[in-house]
Image (cartoon, rainbow, N blue to C red; front, side, top):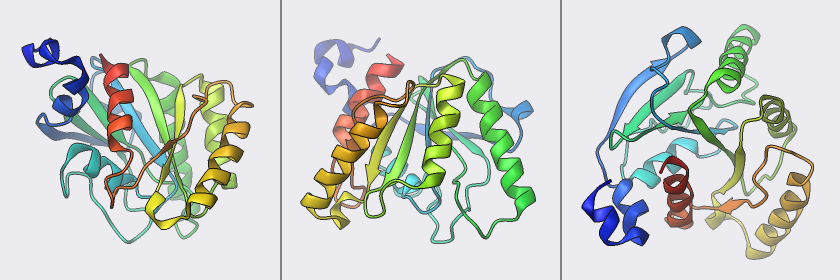
Length: 211
């Protein structure tokens, strides 16, 4: 534990996310995942939900996680090592209809195998575009997470593009829905990568999970 962490525990999340972050591996099959020796925090969501943008914003980088205007570009599990303390895992986007059925099947199997067999996985943050709300594909992923008994938490993205009234209604409906999912953390988080809103609370949650 660093002296900086000891001197001011409240600054630890900000300090942690300022550490060096490097791309370690891109795994398109379960056999080539990094050794399960460090805690892992995964980010999942529909294609174009703003997953890469949120990861970059959390880390204070511009292009560590690849941002694309073409849905479905993340086609593997991408592992980023932060401060030699834990992995951030960028999972393949789902719900992209233009991908081939064979490709979707491969992605689905990879995700299922990862979720069911990854002991160091502390939590999956499931991203929902606040403009469009909850979709059927999100429900399917939540059911998969429930079956695998993997802790997960909803993160609403692009909050700057929605009205306060819409966001309040969305959070209320999601909070009610989450009560029916045993592996779900009960409280959604609200973020905006563009406006840098909600990043500190998310960093704090992650810092507490990885120790």
